Image (cartoon, rainbow, N blue to C red; front, side):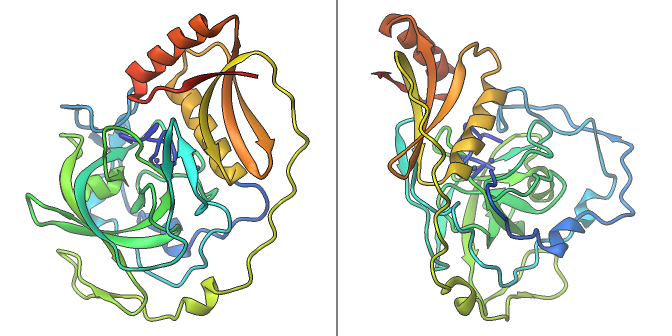
Length: 315
């Protein structure tokens, strides 16, 4: 998950926030076919007018002439991901994702993420497709569906939430490039929106659609299955010295996703980002450093780049 952690975006936190160990749910066929095969790409991408997306991110080199024809996500019954909805921490801030589908409505700033993350794994292991109707949110259950309304224009889209983030600047949600395009804020980078969850059986009419989008299949029995077994923790690699702690997760998928995002966003780093497994938690450490002063200087650079400051620890 653009503006993400740290888009993460789960695109978002951050960064992000979020992947795949073990078998993952199959991406719905509607998402695979979200971009009609007739789309063509002769149009140059618009120039950015402001940092709604991540540093060094941006639109594609060319965008489809008829990107407005990309259909909204179609809500359907899906089991929630086994690991990506566990509580996690990104750069000192704790997040507790919802463990069930329930009503949600909030207003805030939406950003978008594009080519820098295109093809990278989302928090549930699916490749991010900037031309599909998807989104990243810090705490909505994934996968789930939401209606996003541009408050200034009244335009609405329906997206499938399949990633974590954004984790910067108190942004509410990261949308895919296609979703932001349809809402009309690609050039500005961000916009004030309202996000409302779509629950099973609800009818949601997005602006410009000919018929309501209905999720009629019961989902309760899919998400009420017995808890899945937690995968065995890998052998603990002992780390000694001075490090920066970047985050802590109950899911290895989320930890590895944030690690990948940070490596892309902080490409000036020379130290290794370690994932340490201990007592059911996966923690991200950066280092080692010669001393706390050197670690502190790097922490300050990270704060300037991502608006979050990791803390120094001695191991």
